[in-house]
Length: 267
Image 1 (tube, rainbow, N blue to C red):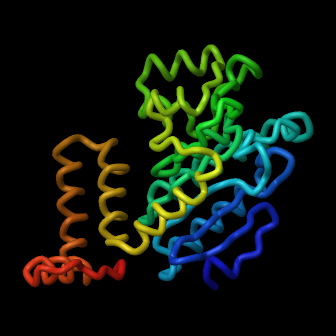
Image 2 (cartoon, rainbow, N blue to C red):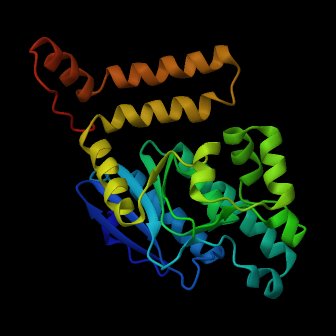
């Protein structure tokens, strides 16, 4: 089964030009529960082994919201053990996203709060709509006396730095996309009406390029950051060795000497 054959309840899946498009689809706010996380995990696994998919784009099919985070009704209705299981499983899904050798781009077209922001931060790149109406933040500490439980404490600190992460979590401050961009939480700011087009075009460019080498570079960064420098260099060397053995690397060298543009296949 390939990615496009999946029929999840809470996502809409499309594959176009070797880009897997994953649209969150749990109205009214794409708040996720354990079932939705399980579906996302299955989607990532399927995409990981689907050779026709070279890059992934995560966005929302619900108006106004990318994701409001974990469904607060679950806290009211479910026992603490269930919430703990959901939190742990969400971290496993995030790690799977980070260890998948395919670039994952978040196209943030609505409010992105709590676990929704944590999901976006687990993606490799984040494109956001430049709209003052969109709110981005992690309100769990200030509003619920909880902490970000889906990787947020670690993702946030690694991107904006320790003190800024603590400040944002402690105050529950919400950011505009422009403020998030200035902090480094977003990689590109795009006018709302052009967001999907630009996000998709970028993903398609990756898919048509040396997608395998992009994946090796991604793993070298994601896994190397938590290793001592010597071990990280060894990981980089291993990723380079695998890249050198690829068809794309041979094509790249051949095209260079023939003074033409390479034709990569992501193999």
